[in-house]
Image (tube, rainbow, N blue to C red; front, side, top):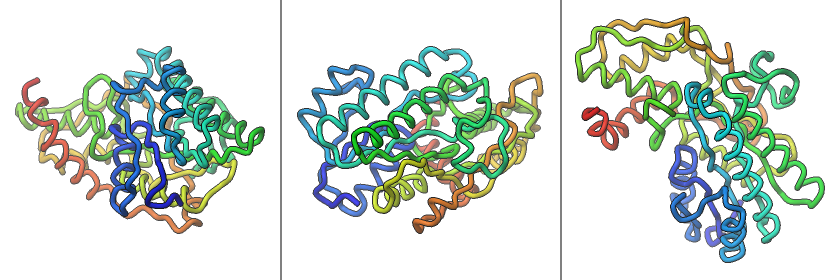
Length: 316
C-alpha cells in the first residue's frame, strides 16, 4: 500500500469511481494526491500525457478515467466509446511505466465478460464467448486496456493490476438522459415524474434482466485493498455478491423517491445482457466485503442528487 507521502495520481477523479477513490485516499491522510480535470489534461493526447508523467512522476497510478454511458449512448456512439477508451488506456499505461511508476491499478468493467456465461461470473470467463452487442465497442476497448496491463507485466515486469467493477452507482454519477446508466437514469425519471405528477413511467426493456449493483464507496475500499495486497496478472472482480431484477430495482427506486404512479415496461427496447452477477471470492480473500446495502446506497445517491442536480432537473 502506498504510504501517506506517496505521489498518487487518480485519473478521472471527478467521475463516479474516481471521486470515490479520491475520498477514500484523503480520509486516511494521503497528502500527495495528483489530480487533473479533463480541461487541464486530455488523456487522449499522447504528448500531453507523456509531459504530465515526466513532470509529476507519480509512484502509483489509479486509472479510473473513461468515456462511459448506458445502452443508448453506447449504441449511438460506438466509434467514440472505442477510440477514446483505447487512447486513454494506451497513453496512461505506457507513460506510467516509462516514467517509473511503481504500481498501476486499471479499472476495467464487468461488461467485458461474454453475454451468456455461467453465473456468478468468475474471472476465468473472460474471452470465452461473444460480447453483448449493445456495449461491444466499450467492452473491446476495456479488454484491450486489460491486455495491455498484462503485456506490460509480462514484458517489462510492470506491476499493473486490473479491477473488474460491476455496475456502479453513487454520488457524482451521471444523471443526464443521454449517457446515464440504468440506476441513475431511473432515479432521475422517477424524480421528474414525481415533480410533474405523471401518472406513469415507462422503463426500457422487459424488466427481467438481473444486475449486480455496487456503491462507488465500496468500490473505492476494494481498490485500496488491491493496492495494499494484490500483485498478479489475473483481473479481480469487485461486486456486491448478489443481484436484482431491473423490475424490482425500478420499484425500489420509486419507493425511495416517493413516486406512487404506475411503472410500465417496454419490451420493444433492448434488455442488454440477461444476467450479470460477479463471483467475488478473489477480492473477499483479501479481506474486503461490501458494506453498503442497495436500499441505503440508493437513499444516499438520491440525497446527493437532490442537493447537487435536482434544481437543474426541475428546470428541464
